[in-house]
Image (cartoon, helix red, strand yellow):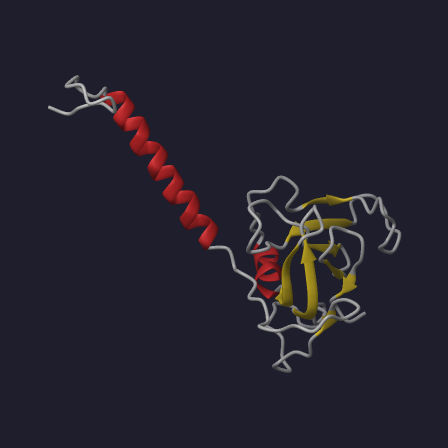
Length: 177
């Protein structure tokens, strides 16, 4: 006969056992699914700089596309990035690879965050002025953040692509205009 936490010889309620097993299974699933997100790897000893910089592409050709003449080449590596949480604490420092996020956006996949893929209203007016609905924002995950973190990719209908590591304070254009 099974015992409860107090050591008495009462049988454990089957429903409680099933709920407990369900909670454990859910926790394992959440841990597994969050491990499937691409993790940014920090540089071992980054130098302090004035801000993010584009890193030259390693290969001259971008991924093949259905209409190469309509696609702009988009930079995917940004060096010297310092990402801070909402309290100002440094949570990442190094080179950020936004390639996996850009590929996810191209495939039409969304993350579980409600603002991933939503209209970006450009309230800060730091991007070129366009009509409402022109820009969409996408979360670029920060490996040490449980929530969406401060990193975003903002894409315009004309293909213009911007990256922000500080939740819309500054933007870096990733496509070649």
